[in-house]
Image (cartoon, rainbow, N blue to C red):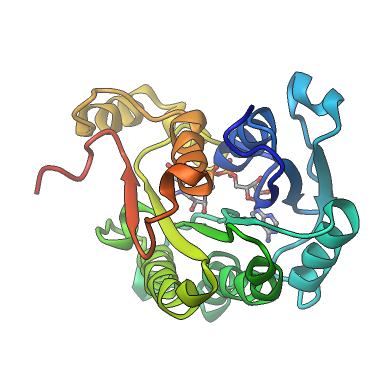
Length: 248
Ligand SMILES: NC(=O)c1ccc[n+]([C@@H]2O[C@H](COP(=O)([O-])OP(=O)(O)OC[C@H]3O[C@@H](n4cnc5c(N)ncnc54)[C@H](O)[C@@H]3O)[C@@H](O)[C@H]2O)c1
């Protein structure tokens, strides 16, 4: 029996990287997964796709109607929802002095506003579940920073504050809310930078494990938080960074 046997999940940003690995891992562990990503992107879940437990859903998470559409689809396809994995996100690197309002707003709308709106839409369904889980992908950049990351860092710090407050407010319904703080992970978002070996080597060396993370390294943390193993863990920010943030 899988660790998520019989559970119903939404995973956003599921066409690539951490979200794709998580959709596959959740399905392998017995969950049925609504895999949400932008219209026009290709979904590929390998062999597990044939088993029919992953249902792709093309939605831009920033659309006003997207959270309700995802919640409705979970009810229609699975009869409810146990796990919301808010993972879709975009990167950005612009110095604050050059940041436009549009660029700032775009990052907040995907990385923070949509996370809140998906969580809000999921609350009634998660309340009806006996093991409601909200998992939000933040970043080590929620607590650290780098040049050009004002919008990204602000959005991810916002995700931490949101996650803690959701945990506080929803605990009485038996719902947990936790955030994952990935370090340097080789995904669609970072592929171009890490294609430059000098950049990949610097980030691999920053990790005390001396390597970049793989999407599955983070998906396994999401699985832990989604599973019964984490039933008494809430309001936490769990770094999956190979020790990147140990040194100051
Ligand atoms: N890769 C890293 O090093 C790293 C580090 C820290 C945090 N993160 C976070 O991990 C999460 C997953 O990113 P990833 O690294 O797997 O990158 P990725 O680019 O491989 O995956 C992100 C997915 O989100 C989707 N997405 C983006 N905007 C969307 C929208 N408006 N509507 C629906 N889907 C949308 C993309 O299409 C993509 O499939 C993000 O929240 C990111 O900020 C990544």
